[in-house]
Amino acid sequence: MQPKLKHQNKESIIMKSTTLFIISLFIIATSCTSYKKVPYLQGAENLTKEDLSIINAKYSQKIMPSDMLSITVNSTTPESAIPFNLPLIPTSKIETNGYGLNSSFGIQSYLVDSEGKIEFPILGAINIGGLSKNEVQDLIKSKIYPDYIKEEPIVTVRFVNYKVSLLGEVARPGTYSVVNDKINILEALSLAGDMTIYGRRDNIMLMRENEKGEKEIIRIDLTKNDILKSPYFYIQQNDIIYVQPNKSRARGADIGSAETLLISVVGTLISLTSLIITVLK
Image (cartoon, rainbow, N blue to C red; front, side, top):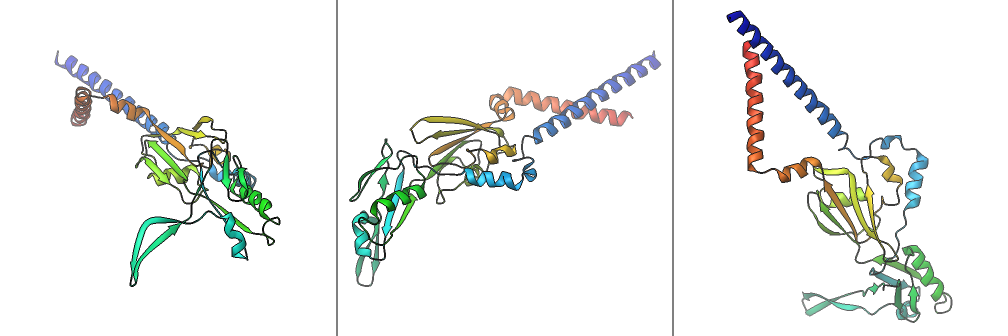
């Protein structure tokens, strides 16, 4: 009977060893598959110069309804440009100096209405919806020069309320103001401390409102270099980026204390089995 028991024990050990080997292979294979979903822009080093030129050419920031713009007109004769600038307004900041109080002033902003129009001094209503900043500058300049100002003026347009919101699996969710109005999705994610390891790089949701006031929802895969050639690579004002959690995070959210205990017990049993196999060798 004893040799038979030893034979059965050996078979049991072999079966357990095989089981552990299969589990290990499964974990390794799963880890390799998961890793492929983590790096951004895989194969980006293979992009050609022509591809990169397309990327830069596609970017064009458009004026949208509810945008707030700072528009200033300057000329070599300042008095001729004054009527085309909104009056300065006092800000809440008051500084003291050696002679009394000194209030600071700020430039007023233009609010783009639902039809894409602004009310401009002297010129009246101007439709700028869907135009870029450079196009707005050229449009205003053409209306002023040479009818009102004999020298060609300098018109400067800036976004005042440029912001982007990041939600979901990012380190610091929130709404962020952007100084530079040329910002891509990778730079936007960096504002929020990048995605967590649980964020799905291959299925990011971008919510956007176009110049007609229509809502758009776009799915973006950051693991592929195709995004560099996409019109959605660059962020527009008031965009909302939602990073969806992966299956691991979703499962973890549903696991209760009982499931956690079960996982712990199973892990302990596997460790003990491995130890016994090592001792019996």
